Length: 158
Image (cartoon, rainbow, N blue to C red; front, side):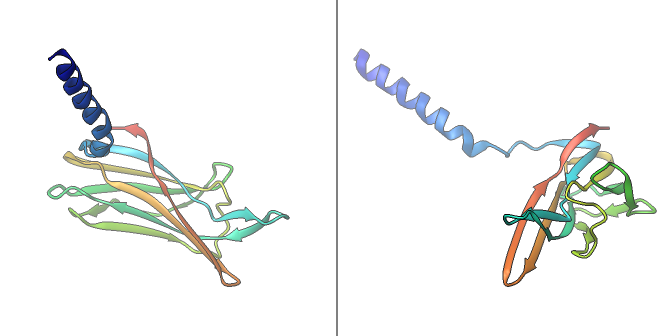
């Protein structure tokens, strides 16, 4: 009897521990606003000589809240040395529920360098689901292509 109980407890513990990753990312985070840092690469280095490989970048700001509009108050593009290259939104921009706003950096625009980044400031009148803010980089040359994403990281909470 004791062996059956011990075996049952062990199985339940194992199921609990191994099912935890299935619930990862399911917690809903809400906020009234944040500043988010997003890495961008206008080029990466490749090959034995470390030749720059130019990339275009798309910053995507996705309002995942089904009910609440968020307002983006600032999107600033910085170069590798931390200097502001461009302030993309002159006025605050509203993003309706389940909508997306984007900022595009051309493959020909190397002003940011390999260490470029965006900061995105957003706010909401009421608590809203934290938006998904990512960058997608893509480049093609000589029949070869590369693409990858970078997730934004919260650096300040309102």
